[in-house]
Image (cartoon, rainbow, N blue to C red):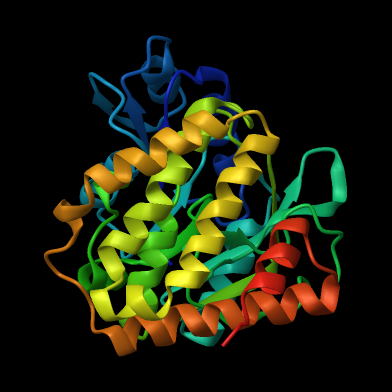
Length: 328
């Protein structure tokens, strides 16, 4: 299949070089590599062009979502591979993903992400989201094993490393640029679920994710954006009747999210994120889905979180959440 790889980047020349070399070494390399330079002050553009990639350059950092959208628009292939610059693919990643997409006829797919230096510990797989608008990157920091070794259908594909057929964007639109970075793929996954689209998780397509290389794993900006964008999800998808029905899961989920940020020393950046989202609430209320549709999507997603957590042992966040909230 013809694939265009889209890699957003900001001030990470070394990672861009490594990512391009990694893609060129694939057993089924992409036809085209697009680097979207988000206003870098280093030599990202020169590095990309030296290695035969094309570069789209912004003068300022416009965020992950807008960078990816620019790459999607510029791509001229049926398949688009969205890839973080801090992901190291196994040499047969694209070949295995292509085979899975061909066999299942799925319109998008993701593989297994492992942590650096931890060959048996996951960084993630697919995404799920609770009624409280808090997302779980399934398998994060869990030992590899069942269910992470089984191919399955998914609705929400993390855009750390994901392949999409162009028809998906034609049907549900591009990434939500108001999110900038973080939770923009959860937002996209909700739209896929509402549209009845399912992709495939292919565990044999493995990669290592260095993790939040742009801002750093514990940067205040990460917690600000994540906290804000969780509330943006509520504003964008929850009509008034749904907010009334789900008020308790929302209150519990968002309060626990603030406490989780506080545990990492970033309570106030997260609180500022929530406050900014509430101030911007009205701008997301113009095209809400039907209550029944969004409630079906998030309730099913939450049930899956509960079943996975119950079978594997609860993380502290989800133990507290499900102690206080009865899953539907």
